[in-house]
Amino acid sequence: MTSRFQPPPIVDAARNLCADIEQVVRKFPRYHRYQSGAALRLQAETVMRCATRTWQRQDQRRFYADKLVDAVDDLKDRLQVCKLVRAYQSFAQFERLMVRAGAIGKQAGGWKRSLETHPNAQNVQAEASAQRGKKLSTRAARSGANT
Image (cartoon, rainbow, N blue to C red; front, side, top):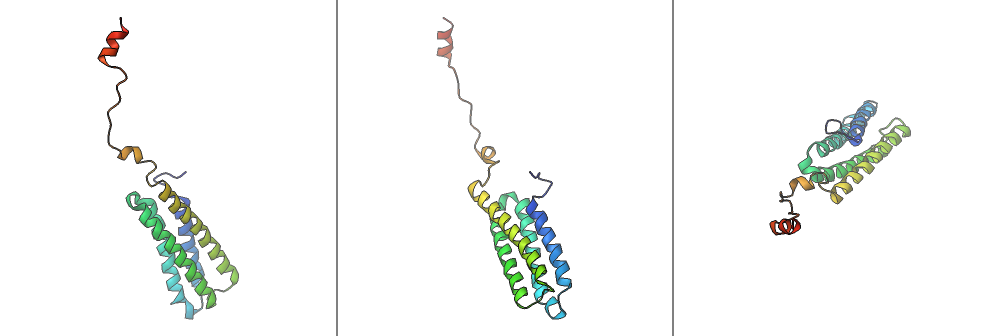
């Protein structure tokens, strides 16, 4: 379980994927490094940013969870395009990135579903209006019990 100071695993996974994409893009051929590589880096940063904001901004979690799912889908599409233009040095690079992006996509989808099912699970009672406790006994009941 994560605390409010420690990010959830999806945030760490998004950061690691972003760093891994940086390393892979460095090895792209020059022709692909500046166009496809720049777009791939931008998509990875978007996924990382959306994951971080979904975790940090509790008042807008559902909004950022939707954006995160869309950003992961866009990243997977960009990874496919880079494969089609043969920007990777090997298929293993593409496969490793795709598996990591797929894992982040599964986590993002689960996070989104949990927010739709339980939007404010811990804050539901706190946001409810304060109610007065019910009286268990009345003055008439007390006087009748003592006789």
